[in-house]
Length: 300
Image 1 (cartoon, helix red, strand yellow):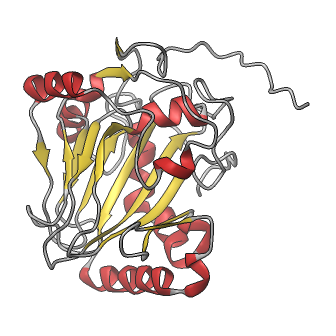
Image 2: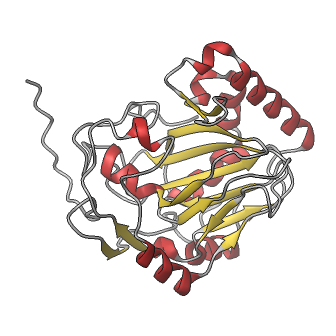
């Protein structure tokens, strides 16, 4: 019998219990000290602190978009990737929808993780060196690709990966144009200031089901209605090469894409090296490392 290591970190954000519980956030949103040099202005940091997100019209150039999109297409059409456990297949079409750990699979995407335009923003928000907790490419082709239901990433990363604090930030970089009709990212501004602990225990190997259709960690309709009434909903659109940075605890989701226009992006999650994962707070076992990294080596 294997005995899990004893956890020494206090659970600040209880979840997956008998009832749904809202807990006020106790962690900062922006961890760097005021005036810390970086590519993000003080006004932008203030808005990020308030809303939980920051949109950039052009993070990478059109020529770079073409390189990353070609690499995305290469990976999702590679027959070997379809059988790789790091690939998620669309239930209806049986086409690859997501590929995880792309910064380890692909030197092209490894370079993007180290790009100062990306890395320096993550360091500035989190106030420390960072490592990649998760990376993936998402493909949402036209004519019926499934969306992602409302959720907080931190709820899963805390419950199932063991991240103790909200010191994690994500960037979604568009590799195709994001219209208001092709299943774009939606965020409830300000929702990151409240942690919504979801009801219900985490099944063993929950990740195998949740990556195709979420079950555990889903907020109730009543809670989502209250959040939406209080915060509203922001839909992100933009050209290929645009990017959205958002806090780990933002309530967000996206709809199905029934248009002819595909929506693809690369998604990178940076976590502070001072916020290393411990044992899961509300799951029987850890998720695999391609979903929640245990290599805490700083990105350089």
